[in-house]
Amino acid sequence: MDASDVAWLRTTEGESAVQEASALLAGGIPALAILDRLRRRLPAASTRAALALADGRRSATPKFADAARLYFDREAAEQASPELVAEHTSRRFSAARRIADLGAGAGADTLALARRAPVLAVDRDTARLAMLRANVAVRRLTERVEVLEADLSSLALPDVDAVWLDPSRRGPGGRVLDPARWSPTLEVALGIASSVAGSGIKLAPGIDVTLLPEDCELEFVSLGGRLVEAVCWLGNLAGPRRRVTVLPAGAMLDGDPDTGATTIGEPGRYLFDPDPGVGRAGLIDVLASRLDAWKLDEQIAYLSGDRPVESPFVRRFAIEAWLPFSERALLDRLRSLGAGRVEVMRRGSPVETNALELRLNRALTGGEVWTVALTRFRGAHVAILGRRER
Image (cartoon, rainbow, N blue to C red; front, side):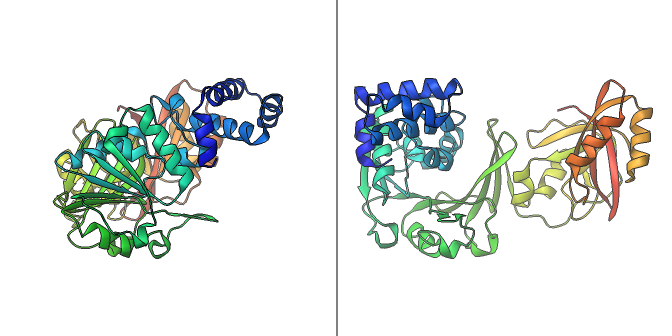
């Protein structure tokens, strides 16, 4: 979609075409058949735009409660921060006077930030800015958002006291991992961010932490057990060196990166599988102390303990048995326990879990569901058998 397409889609005729395309998509009608049907009364460009918006809204549905009213194509929807994540990060800006949202795209973060303070939304993509304007209008935030088309690498930052910056991390071949090839580059982004009182830079969760300044608070955000975002907070928006936030619970764990202080011991009564954000933030030792738990291996994030501690940062399994890994021995033990089906997970094991799970489930005839965790104990490969409790 381009900006003129978005303008037409906002008309009564355009919205009617989108509603028709959405209904046909929901009914399983192929895209080519939908285009053929719409072309009976609309120009080819309009039919493509209507289908693109219908497809984008469908992609955005898991992220936004009102996705059926918003303006995204599929790519914009895939790149947009989920509303829960955008709402969480926007809270840091509650004391800001005016926020610059740099690399605003179709406006997912702008919509959340505008609830905190007036926003200057900047991007160089005219189509994305057209979507942003439409989304701002849908949310009735037009008076709180100023839109500017500009290239961030040459932008003279206007009168703002806080910045939210989302560098473009996509190229012709897909995701770009090298921060020196982002637009703007990480170096330029850090320069912009350091020019205001407080700022946040949205990063890929796999960011090389050695590239970030010492005064950066690095936060990892997990949504529904999946690591979705990393943020470098600077200036008056920064806090502890590391933080992990688990959504939708909103629970936070922070502290200094792991020091290796946690003891190592054999599996106890419970196995704790930490949220991926905890390991990425290097806060396994901090979590272990809260759970009164220990590690099974210095390099593995699984923890074990004897108390059934409740925590939003882990999945907890009651351990029934553990043994050196052997598929034959594992199957025999599962049969003796009356297992009828297993779910296999791993940390630090070379075994392909899907294939093993399929073979085990074919061989089991009992009725109970068990979890098998493949991991290492003091460097040796082991299998831990248990039941998920939380």
